[in-house]
Length: 161
Ligand SMILES: [Zn+2]
Image 1: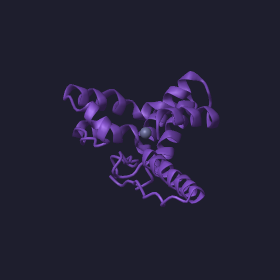
Image 2: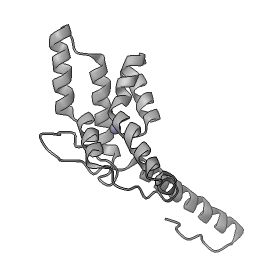
Image 3: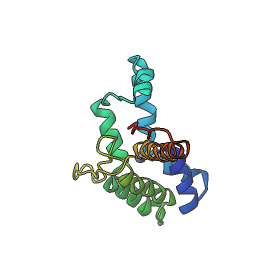
């Protein structure tokens, strides 16, 4: 899921406090702070952006991604804070919501979280948000193109996927 959607969901479901909103974005911070910079240094960022062909990230980047999307790690950190402060941190709820929202919205080709890391490497092959939007736009364009062709008595458009 993209940061804007995480931001919106966190503000509507948990809280719109700045600390909570940042916690709702934090699981993706390692990705956004490392992967694009690494691609830019290699001179591959623009090409990847234009072709949508993204090179695999370095192993340590992937490990950081899984660490920050791990429910056991989140539970351990939130539990330690709970022991120290005497209450569960609201930020942990926002962080956990981010992880749960990511599960059905990332395909295995697109950074599917290993949400039980380091206990397991299991992932869910969800529907990638950008792929879903692209397919939806393609279907809507085909429907509109077909309707326009029928109205104007033109040949049906081909599927552009
Ligand atoms: Zn995420």
